[in-house]
Amino acid sequence: MNIGRGLFRLWLIASVVWVGACLLRFDFSCFFGSYPWCEWWMLHRVHYYFSSNNEYVETLALTFGVPIVAFIIGAAILWAVKGFQREKPSN
Image (cartoon, rainbow, N blue to C red; front, side):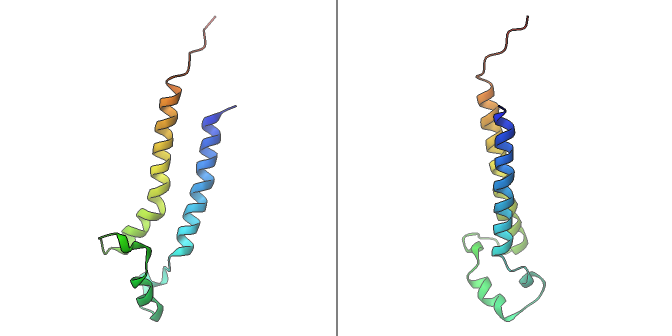
């Protein structure tokens, strides 16, 4: 059983779901033009908690930043756990 491979596949599935959910949440037409619904979206957007006004950077950070950070944390934990495994004796 390869735990690393299984965790990578789990991360990959979770990342695809996360990115898909983020892309469905945002209305990207407001980035390319001014439409009547864009004013409401700008007032009630997910980015309310960020201090920056750059919508592109915030959207990219939220969409792709979370899976990247999760991968780095998972890789670090897996690396640390593998450091405690016993080495197989060579004959």
